[in-house]
Length: 434
Image 1 (spheres, helix red, strand yellow):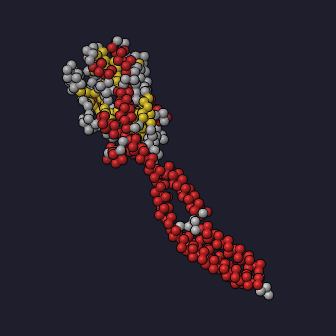
Image 2: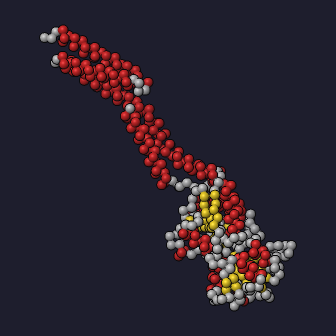
Image 3: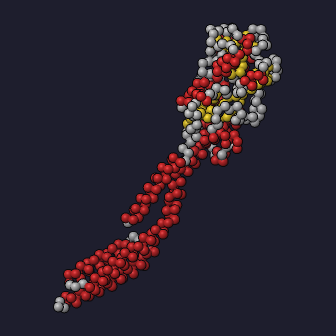
């Protein structure tokens, strides 16, 4: 009984040990909930965040959205661990600001042009013509502000004067419509509500880049985007003439620790949302690694090269999460219990044979003592021990498997034989004391 208890105790301890090791060796469980940094209210990132949230909820992943000023704040939140995923404008990430390399790229998902709207007479000599005018270069912490400052610095223009203000997209649009500023910068999708509203105003013009190749060579994260006349709205002919803009890519970034299955699920949604293309992006171009200036997450690298893993392809997220949890529980079962049940018959057989050997060894010793007992007291002591041995065998018949019952009954017969011999000799001693 004690050895059986020890065996089961060992099995339980091994199971706990395998579970403990599995928690460190295997991937952690995919989370139920993630936090995503988007952007300004009613902006493109905000709208995309809601779309991703809706689609991921159907798959069993809860998404909390965090509205921010824009890409710069999103990067800061990612570095500090305040969010798990963020929409970020390309060109904002600086490796020196991420010395521990905690951030990872997932994919570029579309191009978002830099729109520069201005009031007054049409101008054709580019950014330099805006010097000295009242400008909004984007909200503090936004990607618009970052790219505007970079372009102005390259041209030797200042963004620190009293004529330069930093407004949100909605505020800049209203200020431009009310003639409180002369020009405003926006990095946004062509479908952004503020961009669409300003494109329709006859008193507001769109500034193009005449040196697009030069800007693209100097700013690797910017690519030229040509808007043909009428491309955005054939009915009202927008834009009213061909214009070339510069566009960074919109990126999905995450923390290095984000679970690979979450990365795959988000990229699957990104493919569904952006894969069809748009008026300025060709079908099948996005999501892509092209334009991602942040080290790729391993799972994103695999997804963009070979597609999602087999499990992610055939299982929805909630089922995948359940499967991975079950895998952790099933591992100890197969690692400990299956082998244990395989060797259990051998162990029980060995234990039964060992018990029988011990019984016969004790019986042999008792038989020898019966033959050599020098007196009545010594013989009575041997008889007591033989009777105890018989009781022990009777108890074992209730515990050992059926396989050993025949051997136990044989042993009981042999014990009875030796006991009878001992009693017979004792009787002779009593009748013939000398």
